[in-house]
Each structure stands twice: as structure tokens, then as C-alpha cells.
Length: 363
Image (cartoon, rainbow, N blue to C red; front, side, top):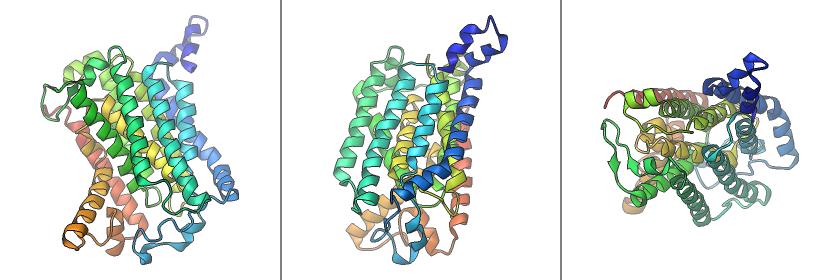
């Protein structure tokens, strides 16, 4: 919306700044950050007044000794603040178009699924929330719809049929069906992996910031023909708006950390974690770097794998691989404090994000 101020740059020269992606990305990040910081206290109080507390949400899911009963009084569903800040910031700073609309609508839909799950858990006191089967099917439908729309977007559909493998210069032309299936599972896996990671104050939001910095750089490079040709990555017109969206997401997560750092004033809940996971997955698909998500979102991948391996091991052998899963709970058994777990996971997330960017030259 603010982009259109650049139309009046002839009358007032500084308005030309609104044409530049970097300026709008910075504006989007700052806007989202300020919205979450300034409105966070009011949001937490509102959620408390609505009795949106945690309500023993961990009971029966992890070892009883790891449950911090004090956190049962902390309000959930703080993800509504994150999503609102992202959407409002994107609407202000993005140029209206199909890619921006897709990212905004996808985020809202994933958040809506999470909100329904949170509502059932913390308001209706249904510990299981939305049945896992329905949550999986609905999120899969949202992911599938996003891929169909991307394939139908002029200038994007052709690139969507290419599958990029890190360290290889030439992408594989797998066709729309195969690439579409991979893309759907990428978004779906990312969505639920971030959801599993959201178990410690600031863990999911902090790791998401590193993902968004990485994807902001990747989408900026893809939107610049010289850089894209030099690095041998796809060039996409209009993908610059994904830079602004990634910046807004990173800014919202940073602002949320103001209230979510230990001890948290509120939790994002599934409303936030499913939305953020969907954003990470959509960014991976947009950049045609689904495999690179293993590095970019390495912490999320490790957390999801720990649950899969733990469940498989218990069912097949009756034995546990880890003391507890997701993986961050394993370190609680080892005696790490919550702050140690979160900060060390952030450090690993930052290193993995840098490693992902380094692969662009190792081709």
C-alpha cells in the first residue's frame, strides 16, 4: 500500500524510497516488531481475561517431572498477535500481487487451523484439541491449494516444475505433479515441525527469525537477475514481495520474543506455530529450495525427526531412543535449564542458516 507513495516522488523526491525492496523490507520488519512489542501486554491481558490459559496442556504428553505447573497460568493463543502483525505489516509494505496475496492468505488459513485447535484445548478444555487426522487433512488441503495457485501464476509455474538439489548447478525437471507433491509435503512437514518445536519459551520464534533472514536473502537474490544468474538460481519476477513478507515475519517474531522470552508472558500456541511453520514451508517452495530446508530449518527438522524416531522405536522395540521427545525435552532430563536449551538451539539454528546460504556458491 505504501509503495504507491512513490508515484508522487516527482513532487517530493524522498518518496522514491518506497520503490526499493530493501527500504520496504526494513519498514515491514520495524512495523511488525513495534506492533508486537506495543500490543503484546494488552494481548496477554486480554487472553487472560478470556481464560485462555495453558490448562495442563502438557499433561500426559511428556514426563510429569518436566511439567512446569506455573506455566499453566500463562495464556496461550498469543499467535494471534504474531499473525496480525505480519498481515498488517505485509499489507502496508507489499505491492499487491499474487505472491504477496498467496503468502498472506496462506498464513491466515494456517493460523485459523491453529486457532481452532487452541480454542478447543484452552477454552473448551479438550486436551486433545482438533483430531490429528483433521488437522493433517486441512493443512494438507491448504498447502495443496497454495501449490495449485503458484503453478497457475504466470512466470512462476515454469519454475515450479524444477527441483533444486544443493551443490548441483542444474535443477531436475521432475514435472508439475512430482514437484507439486514434494512441495505439499514440504509445507506440511514444516508446518507441523515448527508446531512440535514450540515447547520452550522463545524457542520456535527465535529459530524462525534465522529462517526468515535466510529466506529474505534468498528471495532478494532470486528477484535480482544479475545475482540470480551469477549464483545459478531461478529468477522470478515479483518474488521481491516475499522479501518484505519474510522481513515482516522476522520482525513479528523478534517483537514476540519481548514477551515470550523466559519466563513467558504468553505462548504463541498452535495459532502461531502452525502459521509460522506454514510460512517457512511456503518460503522453501517459493525459493525452489525444498531440500535446503533441512539446513535452513535444521532445528525444526531435528525436533520432528526425534518424535518420529521415538514413536517408531517404542512401537517396534518397546525401547526409547531419547529420554523424551521432542528433542528439547531430552536435554531437560540431562539437566539443562530452559534458557540453556533455547539459547544453544538458537546458536545451532544460526550456524545452520549460514551454512545454507554458503551452499549457494558451492555448486
